[in-house]
Image (cartoon, rainbow, N blue to C red; front, side, top):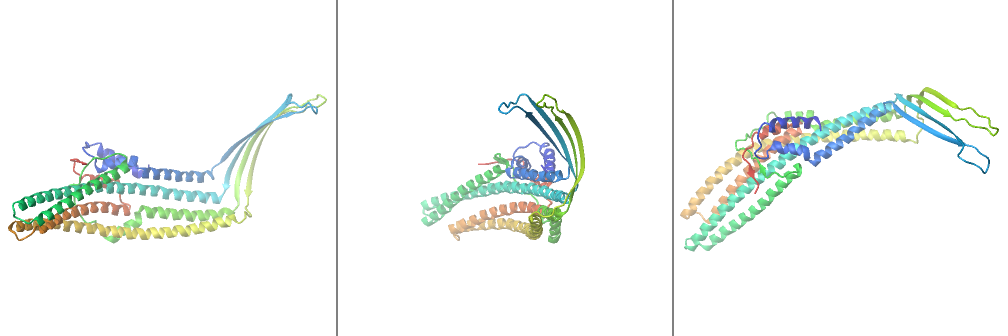
Length: 449
């Protein structure tokens, strides 16, 4: 894992190890996700695979050593009476060493691999940041679904009470049967919405489990006094911060530099290469007998060689020129990729900055909407009792109140996720943000239905 994950592990140990866990909070779930999330594990394996390209590039500049050996058996005999016995064995081995003295193409290829490796490390760090966003989104979507289910059940209970009261009043002749039908329709609809909300909550729990590999029936909830504040600084300051530290943008810069250096390597493919070559050989020649029975020479011979070789490419069917043109196009493509990433990052950070500020305003207005809807419902209920309002007015007012409660809940969780997304876009998102956010979760568990 990268330095980002190592830092997360340290922070988690300091945080989780110091307090008993009564329910699954954001930190403990993120810790599990870091260990079990398949997407992150896949990204890590891909980074480690790309990291070997650096070692492969370095290998072209390092010495290479090879050992060769051979053995030969020679036999002689009269025609038609050939046999492997008696026979003579000869054997030997050779140790070769080659060291590049001048290979500009290999050198540039290695430097290009170093830039690509940096881009890969940053891309992996971006995946770690993305995991934080995915975990936070899944976690607060569970809380969002819990709040939604809670209001749906309250609305169902209120609709049921209204239906029973209306039916009782109709039975004694105080109201018409149409009001009973209106109340029953409202109750049936609220019951249907509760069933849908229960299914949605189960799906949200499943989405969280898919990241960590474990169920989380107990989760901590966000405190009511969680601070809702505007982000510090201006839009331009956040945009500039993103230009300096956005991970996708930084990785794109490294990839562009890697392609530029790779172009140098391809231009150097037509240059001479110089190498130092050395060798040691040991050969043992077996003796043999001639037809008249006399022995021939046998013995061991040792030898060494040391040479400097030069290789000058002259023509390879146009392959060198084709690879150079391909590298030129790759530079252009990566430059445009960088431009696209820069524009997309600018657009994203500005949109998210505006969205966070809008979230603050929306939350404030939706708090006021709850107060207004509550007051309106109370007034309409009084009017219904004295006969100036009908049952439809009551049902609509109650529905508006619960809609306002759900809208407020949505706005609150949107704000939390958007603030994390803003830090992600600027490259400032760290595990400390999760630890800080975790302090605003209630310690009392909420159990899944």
